[in-house]
Length: 216
Image (cartoon, rainbow, N blue to C red):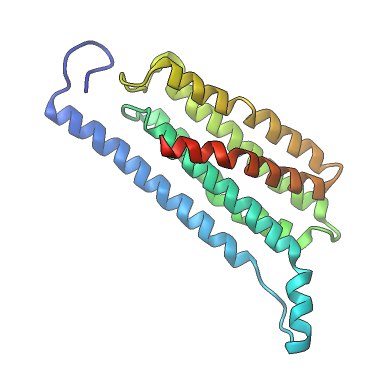
């Protein structure tokens, strides 16, 4: 590994520090992603019912299934892309770690608006519930874009072994995210159900590319 400020090889102590810094950031991030994804299933529940009513209750809560699948896939894609993009980072600095913390703050918050969607979709109050959900995902997209742009600018935190073509490929992957989640947010004011369905469609759209990145 070489220093980003010159051709001097990094000392063993510097190399160890860089490796530990990245590893600890990834480990902490992975833990938050895992907990957030796990908490989603706790938002699925049915009212007490006898055997004859249980089948009806299981079908009645279809918004819970929709919200769960949408949020789980979304968090999963964020995690896959986060893992892939961290491979391009030579080492994090304090600012990058703070931005990463804000991103994780938003990710950890996702189960709450997911619960709102599960409870209020197709009922009175669905508008504010879906708006809160869409706003959370929009903030996530904004923070994720800032997260990458900060590391990318002037190759500030990028490892020397990462080519410009690889960076441009990541840039192209980020490009549609922010405007699309902004579209979801605007749509939530007019058609909450359509906004949730579009969010699921975005997750399904990004899933193949996220899996491809993970395999590289």
